[in-house]
Image 1 (cartoon, rainbow, N blue to C red):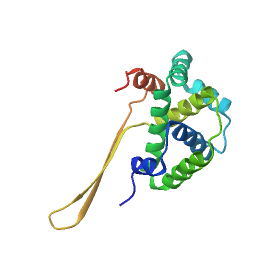
Image 2 (tube, helix red, strand yellow):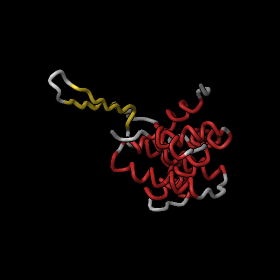
Image 3 (tube, rainbow, N blue to C red):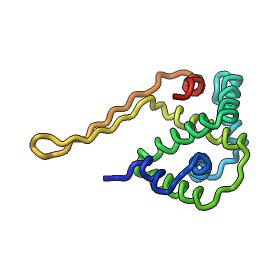
Image 4 (tube, rainbow, N blue to C red):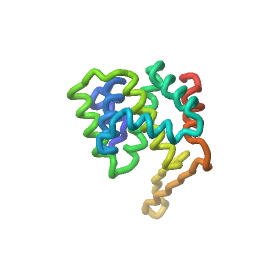
Amino acid sequence: MTESLAAFLEHIGADADTVQQATRYYLAEHTDDLDYEEMRDEALAAAPDAAEAEELLHLLTSHSEYLEQGALVILSTAWEDPGERDMVRDALLDAKAKLPVIEVAILGIVVMYGMYLLATRGRKKHKRVMERRRDGSYKESVETEYFPPGNPLSALIQLFNQPPP
């Protein structure tokens, strides 16, 4: 059985800084080192309402729990894809080994851009279930629900406006 992201994070003793830096490393690898200003420009240009996108960025940079939660969403979604899992693992190990001091504003942009990338894939919900049948065989089912066309960044703002649990 494949190790879960939660188990891996616990195994390496990842803290919030490690998770946030790993998200930066993962997206740098995934986007061929796209500059954070280019990430910001692209995400804002895609938003139907730039003010709402700026609000999301402000929430990310002023609430560390939102920044960490956004980073965890990005990494956990990537972890689900077996082809991305090694890249996420490497990013986490690199972040754990060397923690550079990165401005919160840059991390906010990185997380906003990562959430933008997730939203533009159109996935609202993805569930993979493995079960053993009575005859001993296995059945895997995958359920994917997509967002309706519309404003993905508005949906993200609503997500991040919810009070923390």
